[in-house]
Image (cartoon, helix red, strand yellow):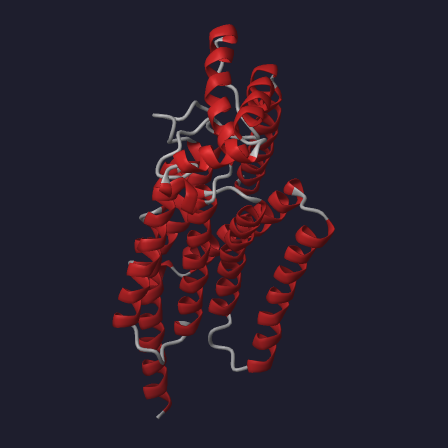
Length: 326
């Protein structure tokens, strides 16, 4: 039954992504293309016109790096959206995205704010973790590294939603995948925590690193295949969630803290379904993706509490075992 549910979720994700691609027709519409052509011709083609445009550009948009051509695309997106809605009673998407109002240079302000909330939550909780868990505790280094990877991922998520470029898109995708993959590695290290075989653990770690490097190299140097990247993320993410949930069930007698980890993983898994929602952004800022970032922002509180108490549980367990051997 659980496998069937996972398959349905994966299928729904695939269908949702296909729907987004088919629904992105605003950037190919006559209204948009005609408006953009005229805007570029009148504002960006001659040096004098470009200097005049630069003199009127807000400082925040200049610092973010918006060009004259891109500014024409943004303005024409709203002009064509108004025309298309009046004609077809539909709001079109542009390059796979809904129209978003630009705020202080940010392309998707709500997603930026919610990404920063996730970043701050991870920073706050890892500082708390360091204060309550001794550095000698098992898994201490793994959870510190996990936090660094998560903070880096949310940093690039904030940058990407601020300014969508080829580079920021790659960094957002690859850093997000690094958190999913490392969480699976953390699970493997947790079940091997009492193993004294140091060399196999090192090989295991570098095996995960090589898999990640190979994936990134293939995406950058061979082909930036969105479908392949999505399949890899769904496969690794699904396996990661399933492994942790099974582990939580088998170790539920360790203490109440197990529930915190289980709730964090379960909530994260369920929150992914928000990506399947399809609606015009609320206040032209909050879409399903932004909502997903909002929902995940408090989850680090549960996860780091689980990680900290699990480390303390292992310290106490090892102390008892040590006393028994004396």
